Image 1 (tube, helix red, strand yellow):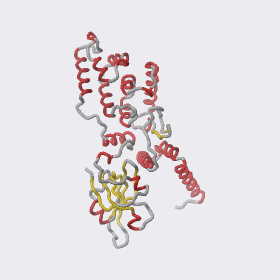
Image 2 (image 1 turned 60 degrees about the horizontal axis):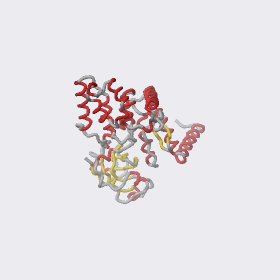
Image 3 (image 1 turned 60 degrees about the vertical axis):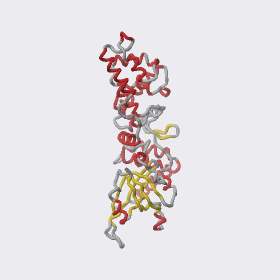
Image 4 (image 1 turned 90 degrees about the vertical axis):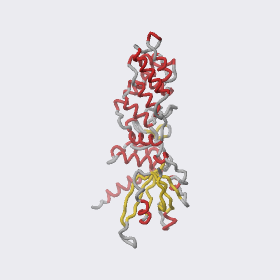
Length: 354
C-alpha cells in the first residue's frame, strides 16, 4: 500500500499547519486539540498526552473557570480551562440546571456568584444541583478559590445532605447571620420553641451530632497529593494539580524531567512515575537475543519517552521498573555515552520509592 501524490501532499499540509500552530499559537493549538479529543480512538490517553506535553512549554491546563463557568474547553484569561462537559458524571442538563440555580440565587441574595464563599454556595445552591456533579466539581478543584480543602468541602456537602428541606429553608432565610456551616448548625440545633429550627428533640440531637462531627472530624480533611491525583484522574482522566511522585520523599533527586529536557546534563537523578514500559529483544550484534526496555515516565513538570534501559541494567532492575511504580532513575544523557544526537536518557541505577 502506498500513498498517491495528492494523498501524501494532503498529509504533509496538515502536518505543516499543525506544527506552525503549535509553534506560534500554542494556547490555541492545545485548546482545540483538547476540545476535539473526544473523537480520538482513546480520548483519555489523548487528553493525558496533550496535558503532559503542554507542560513542556509552560502551559498548564486548569479546571473549568469559576469566573466564566465554561461548558466546553476554552481559553480564559490567557489560560486553557477544561469545560464542565470534560468532567465525568457531568451532563449538559446538569450544567444548565446549576447555572439557572446560581442565577436565581444571585438575584435573591443580591451578590454575584464570583464573590460567593463556599458556605454561601453550599446553603444557596448545592441542594438544588445534582449531587454527583457537585462532588465531581469539588474533586477536580473547580472551587479552588475557596480556602477550604476539597476534603472539607466534600465533608460539609455530606453534612448538609442530612438537613431536612424545612431546615434548609430556615438556613437560606438566615444565611447572612452566620459565616460558616458550623455556626449556622449551632443556631439551628435548638427546637423552634427554643429559638432554633428543629421540630423536635430527636432532630435537635441529630443536628448537635453534626456540629460535633464538623468541629472534630474522625478523619483527616487534608488534601493529600495522592488522593488529589487519584480523584482528578478519575473525573478528568489526568491530574492537573499534582503528580503521584509528590507523595514520596524525593530528596535524592537533583533534576526534573523538564530540566533534563531543557538541557541539564551530568549525573542526573530524576524522581518519576513510570507510565509505560516497552520490552525489546535485540536482533543483532554481540547482545543478540537479549531483552532490554524503553520507558516513558512523568513527574509534575512533564513527561519523557526517551528512557533506555540496556540489557545488563534491565536484568538488575526489571522487578521495580513497571507501569505505575515510583522510582528515582540515575543515569546520563545518551549523547554522553554513545555519541547519539537524540536527548535520550540512559538508566544506570534505580531506587524504588516507598
